[in-house]
Amino acid sequence: MEKNATYYEELIATYFAGEATPEAIQELSQWLDESPAHLALFDDYRKTWMLATRDAIDSTISVSRAWDNLSGQLNIEQAEISETPSGVSKIKPMFAYWKVAAAIVLVLGIAAAMFYLQKPVMQLVVAEAGNMEYVLPDGSVVNLYKGSSIEFDKDFHKKARKISMEGEAYFSVKHDASHPFIVRANDANVEVLGTEFDVKAVSGAKRVEVSLTRGSVKLYFDSNNQIAALLKPGESGVADLSSRAITTSTIRDANYMAWKTREITFNNTPLEEVAAALSKVYQTSIQVKGNTKNQLLTATFNRQELDDILRIIGSTLDVPISRNGDTIIIDTNSIN
Image 1 (spheres, rainbow, N blue to C red):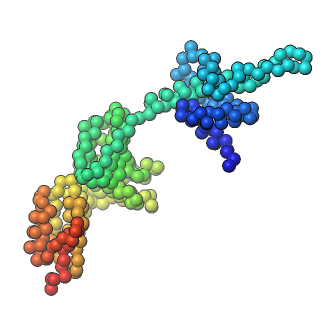
Image 2 (tube, helix red, strand yellow):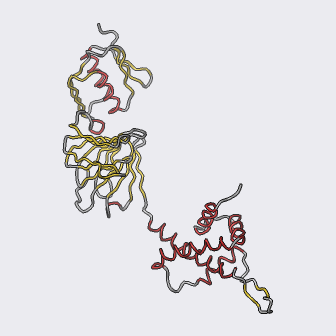
Image 3 (cartoon, rainbow, N blue to C red):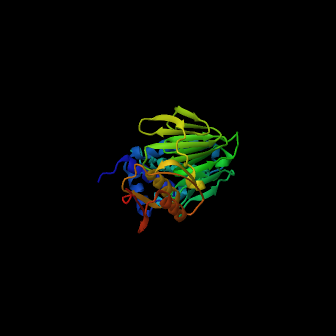
């Protein structure tokens, strides 16, 4: 298979990073011998990287020493001498090209080191076993729903506080006017100074939902911050990733924080909605069978065990509740 220029550019980058195998080094050597254009590519890299890193290069660096190292690895002669028609010895320009190559290796090595030294160290937190609470370096607190994750620069509190998330999380942000707190979920951003809010950004979903408890937040698209909405306490915002629109409304789900607080309120709530809410809070499959049209529940539960809640529902609505493996069944078929 014919190898294009991109392949050899990647090979050069691999060599500069010190990750090239002996076979790759030999292949690079042969390619550079094939054409002055290949060596000219080295020169282009040299010019670009010299401009980018000139302030970081010590004036005492020896290019000759770098050349010695490079030539030793690639088995290149220091110079090729031939006789001109007039009998005067002439050094072929190959050595000059390899001098350029040595300089590029040196410069790119320094640039690569600078890049990796400055590259931020990222911290990934995943709520694998169940809901979890995590304190960020700035003192802000994140409650993660089971399976959710956040990722951030360990030094993010020293600059703009940016954090990426997936799943659902509740943020209690420590106030810091000089360092805005920005949560990125898919292509939507939530920006705050100090507040409490819930973000739902389930993987594969076409929307990001934000429900605000306290303070104020700005919801906008990362790719277009002109499309934005300001939320007030008690409001929710939805960023539709398909239509690229943001809508706001009063929070309709009284239990949007129940997964975190386990405080659940039902007010003439249909049984199917009751089952869905309990399934999320207790992370258990609860299914309703039969006609549930007239089955409405009014009750409040505060950190009670699921079995206790199910007994109350069963006696209140006079419906049998059973288990089938890991699934809880609320059966209304017996109701006349």
